[in-house]
Image 1 (spheres, rainbow, N blue to C red):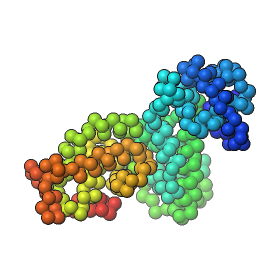
Image 2: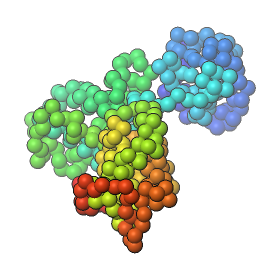
Image 3: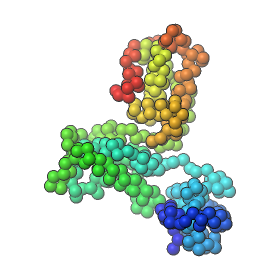
Image 4: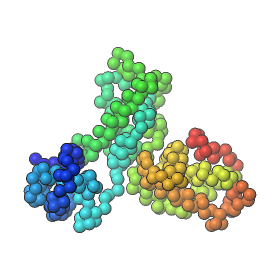
Length: 349
């Protein structure tokens, strides 16, 4: 039986020589027409009927569908494998990423040291140790934590995203575990793996330490929150931040001021980034590098909005320059703590 879903399609594509893929244009059109007839969605229940409608053999179907999937002509949704085509109900436009998709991308992109830090944080919450017989339970705890931070329920068996989620989780676990041992931070004694130099943390405070830089919103929610707050929201936050600095900012600390405004703005709209993540995204935006990591596109939008508005303070009359200092107009100082900008220069609080 042919399986058009991503794991099988990709495997089939990799196994086929390039010339076979190049010859699949008529076959691809046959798949498009067959899927248009079923409103562009194929499921496990309907894929045999779709294949029959194409008139293709299983090998021809896998070759053509594999090439189409690699080119982004399909997306996996809760309804099944969906064709992205102008004549489909979706108009050929992919739906925004869900929390689970963002979590999969985040876990898949973690570097070794950060993967190790995630496991160490979870170990700290569970008493600094895990027995060899508890690895499945431990994996479930990590899965639950990741899911909660990205705003979704852990996928159940049979869900389209189940395999991809746990594959990414396993990759993160293997990479993080190997790194903890390589760094000499784990000792294994009598079937128990203990985190060295670890002070156990009560589970009630787990959410404040574990996966600290992961988002508490999905991409769509963050995107909408940024747009809803818009320029008025940035102006409000900007005025509050500069008032806390004594209504003045040294011109040569403009980047630090923008980063501070961005962090407070994101907190204002319900997102909770780390200072390090804000600095990373702001630096990427300033240098023209596409933002990576969790919610990179949405955070880059916030960086663009904040940078534009802060840069326009003087022109818009919200500030005036006196020598090397930018002074806010119509500002009542509520503090005079320029040292508050130091974390946005060093990346450390």
